[in-house]
Amino acid sequence: MAVVRDLRVLLRFQGFRRLLAVRLLSQGADGVFQVALAAYVVFSPEKQTSAAAIASAMAVLLLPYSLVGPFAGVLLDRWRRRQVFLYGNLLRALMATVTAVLILGRVPDWLLLLSALCVTAVNRFVLAGLSAALPRVVDAERLVIANSLSPTAGTLAATAGGGLAFLVRLVIADSDAAVVLVGAALYLCAAVASLRIAKELLGPDRALVHPRLTTALTGTARDLLAGLRHLAAPPRREAAWALTAMSLMRFCYGAMLVMLLMLCRYALTSTTDEGIALLGLALGVSGAGFFVAAVMTPWAAGRLGPGRWIMVCSGSAAVLEPALGLPFASGPLLAGAFVLGLTTQGAKIATDTIVQSSVDDGFRGRIFSLYDVLFNVAFVGAAAVAALMLPPDGRSVPLVITIAVIYGAVAVVTARFEHQ
Image (tube, rainbow, N blue to C red; front, side, top):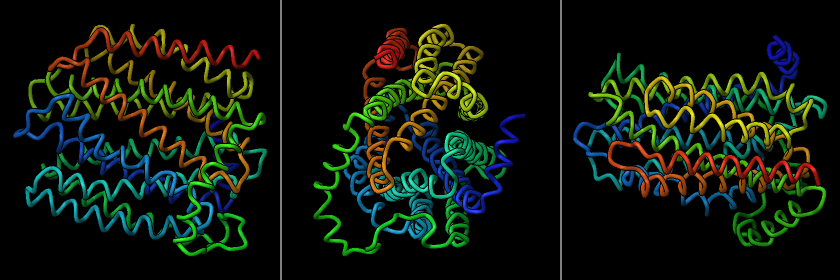
């Protein structure tokens, strides 16, 4: 297979191998932690979960990153990225352990969400740093392939982590706290793996690597404006539109995820264990879509160009999402999870490539942090819209149609943009 051959070529780069190991362990831990939280919020027998409750939890966990994200970018353009991976994962291991203790103590939900917020806030630094560091460990010729395989491998690792969380909860210990502790152990492993990377290898190229924190924070607004001006310049307008298109597709994916959670909780299953098992299967099928996207995207983006590949992905989703979603049955929804996994990840790989190829190294940290902010705002916005439109059992024809229209609009505008 071409993807196996490409991976073998990339694994010859020692820096890529070590950065990939950090990504796999870190995002695998993310998958474990996120599933544990989802199970606690959505599937706890003592809770009557609603779409509004899910949206509220997402808002508490994700909206503050709209403030953290820009600061993460500014600091990533100053701090050694290797050190961010080391100390970030150590901090997440500690806070995940605290979260497990709070679950056992049956504390109020707001306190638990605050602890979880600390875990996922650090995630903004780690994920943005992983993307910004990738061009430092592969050559320009292989950057598209690396963008296809590395983030997708991380997504698959997160999916595998989610599968591990389901396995621990269903087979070994019916305890969300135990699952969170597994995530804490994986965060610790990611921190240890980062020690194998030289401090200077991942950049950034700055004469002053460790400025005073107050100086960095004071210059945040100025640096962000410079980053936005950099992104708005004519050579990078394609990157600006790609980020917009990807955010809209993320909105669609998030809305469908909330609907899926509600369907698994109420309409399609009769017990908590059945609901968790069906959700796990759906996430696994979506992960298979991520893998297929990693195989297809280098070839498709090479022949069509990254922008046209985004158009194909969004157009395909516009057609297939309502066809598979409207029956509100397990089989079609699983097929839909595969399609949305493939199209969303395919578009993301293309977007990463466009942004990394267009943005200078000194700006990548803050641009990818803004990328993360757009992702979070889009996801929370999707949850809020879903909360307004979803009935208690999760079946909503208007929501499915709305998502299809958004996918179609992205495809049409991207087509016009590519023909300019």
